Image (cartoon, rainbow, N blue to C red; front, side, top):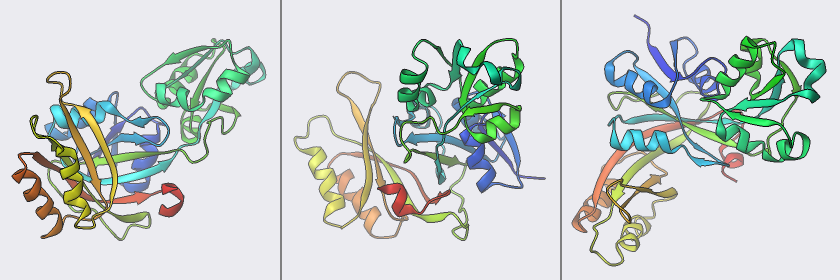
Length: 293
């Protein structure tokens, strides 16, 4: 039986690019939403799910974080970073009429990433948000009678037979998206993959409500052990105003001394700590140093 990988579909999304690179021979199953992709792992319909976690320009994908924290407790077993290049595409029948486009469709993040182009070149166009860049391309493909365009990647144009009329319309060239790989169990992915960049451990830390200077103490637990943090982010607990948890990315694999020592120290401060995953991360297209600048 072949391994099945679920992802945010339809065909032509940036998530599909990530899946194609990490799971080239596995069966790929698209889902309409991020929660549906995650639920498929829990139900056993697929072994892995690949979903977006963070974009370098637009920030975290909150629905992914919140669903993993509040709905489905699945470990993160891997991560892949994909460069984001956005193009304006139309149905081939309309390639000579693109300046008359009345609507541009795409995911809200993609439209935001192309704000300068849309503002200066297409200021009067109607912007329509859909579930994904792939869904936008699919709609344009199915409605050649409408003078509309989609924002998406080259894979979307290829999958749906669209014509790219303006390439690289994104605002920033150093734009990337992090995609996390989920599994029911903490399985080990390959560190021999050509895109392998290193290892990371992600923790969820909830502070005690009545402890002054708790966040400083939390950061100190990492600092004196010389553990490098690549990210710390707060998210609401959804239990009332002022109640937050923190997501912390540690740039190393879970060991037997340092990270367990951090967890023990934080728990002694009455913090709640949950390990969301310790996993390898991969980069497509550029070296790690270039992406992190």
